[in-house]
Length: 145
Image (cartoon, rainbow, N blue to C red; front, side, top):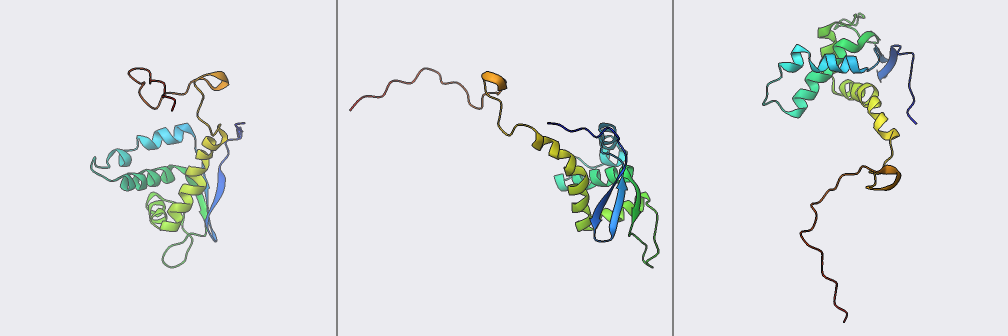
């Protein structure tokens, strides 16, 4: 069963010990806005998938981060989220991975709530598509030995 959170309220996500961020819900509107962000559009055609993923994650985080705790400047003084600070935060590999896992990928768990088997071509799961081309002619019956 698909469970819906009708509150659509921001949530806190722990990204590292002592570091947590408050993020907007990952909605369709947020994803669409991020996909059309100028920084995402500016990624060169020849860029690798990894470079595209980093650009997208940073653009998404800039839109999603509302507040944070446990993040400070070089002197150890707490700082507020800003686009540059969010980018710097995601440049830390374990933080980037935690952001992807706890925020972005968490919503991909929706896929796990589906039936794990492909639909059958007949019966209650009608709709599976063929994976091979049909044979040109029927096979001959095997000889009995």
